[in-house]
Amino acid sequence: MQQLAHTTSLTPRQIRNGLAVLIQYNLLYFYVDDFAGTTTYEANPHAAYGLLRSGKLLEMAESLFGPAVKDVLQNLLVLGQTRISDLNTAYRTKILERDSIAKEPPPDNPASDEEKPPQDVKPLEVKSVDQLHSVLCQLIRVDIVEVVTSHSLKSPADRLKDVELEVKQKYFPGELKGRKEKEEFQKKVCIRLRELRDLSGSLKRGMEANGIGRSKLRKLFNGDVTNGFRDDSDHALDVGFSDIRHLIRGADIAEAQHCYTGQLGKVCGGVSQQASCGGCVRGDRRDHWARICRSPATVNEICATVSGRPLT
Image 1 (cartoon, one colour):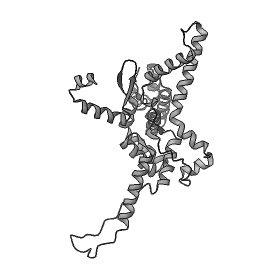
Image 2 (cartoon, rainbow, N blue to C red; image 1 turned 60 degrees about the vertical axis):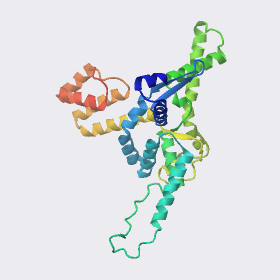
Image 3 (cartoon, rainbow, N blue to C red; image 1 turned 90 degrees about the vertical axis):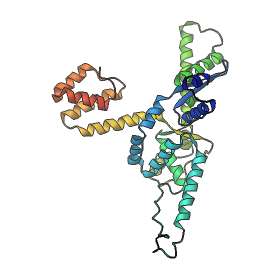
Image 4 (tube, rainbow, N blue to C red; image 1 turned 180 degrees about the horizontal axis):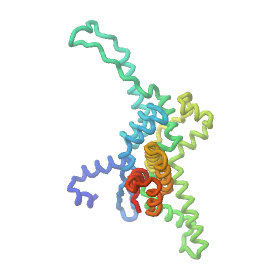
């Protein structure tokens, strides 16, 4: 806090409010060191990228699942980390207000300028709390929305540090000796990290454990099932930016492939295949694709558009 006050020239109250907003929107990791009595903050680049591409995410959600899913997802992006009970209250209030406006009688003298007839009320995309639960089921099922846990607020490096300390104190109180013991230590660390990662999917597993099978999930996606969602109102939900960035990148690749035909389509497919594997577009492959489509400039444009990575 003192370092932020020194570098930003803001008051402690302004800094606290700013940090609270950044944490609310998952733009900031924080880690409390109980031994040193300090708190460190770190920017979350995945959440920042997700907010920048929120328009693309909403467009993709509407095309895949419909306008109701887009409406809920848009509200989650605007509100940040939100409890299910707060979402229930917000949508219930909006629905009641919409119903009260729809039931208002028309004025006695609609022809006068001062008393114009009420305009048509825009219909709500989510018409009931049950439909809200159905939409949340869809978002949770496809891992676009996840449960917020204390570990999800820590950076990957801080989570690893905590897990290594926990495993060492629990299973290896002394010094690690020998290759076998070190391998066993790394194995237990990986298992524990996987357990912490799966905590964000606890609501999804609980939903499936309550009897929502494949056939029922298909009906759920079509809006035919609304009572399969278990109302865990204490859970806080947030958009899983670390997972959806791959979905956004995949949508960009699909759009880019539609823009090119023939040999250019093959080039675009090759670039997207290599980019989806997490690698850069190598110079030798770029030269090969340039010979295919006889346009090095076009290949450079495809690489920059599809892969989003530096050309090496």
